Length: 206
Ligand code: SF4
Image: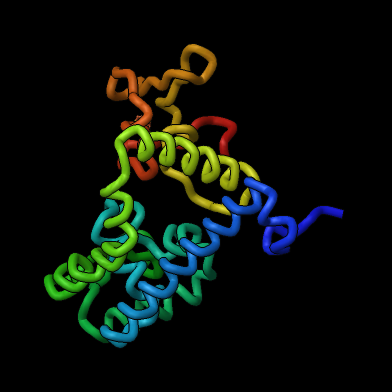
């Protein structure tokens, strides 16, 4: 039987388990920081996440169905959060001419201010990263992108806008070098993107 990474007698002698348990601790830190922010602003964590997403993504992604996929939630849950944000005058909707049920979501001036402020909630996680050596950061980013790509392939993370799933991405030298056909340039490890506005899903990637 497979051993649990949380079984200490196993975790303490197994590098993979220590990494899994460390990632779990870090995800807990994100939850705590987001929760603290949401208590302070009397908003739910998902409302804060939606505001930050709207601030940083283009119009075609600012729709209920896209947000539902992005956050792995039902359209009904997202619609409830959108309604709450609208009641707080933080967002407004523009309806499609052909389909009056479908709409795009925009931040109001207040919503933008709130999103800019709340998007700094990760500062305490960023501080220790800023102190790391550049090569350590590069290696960490490569490893994390590899894990995220694998979770995307197995369907645990829904939407990806990363280089590895992009139509414009090419790997050369057996994956040791990366190339973007759109930018017409080689990408160093630290230039690989996790969330790219120009990303187009490659054929055969779901
Ligand atoms: S378009 Fe963006 S996601 Fe696609 S390969 Fe180029 S940099 Fe990466």
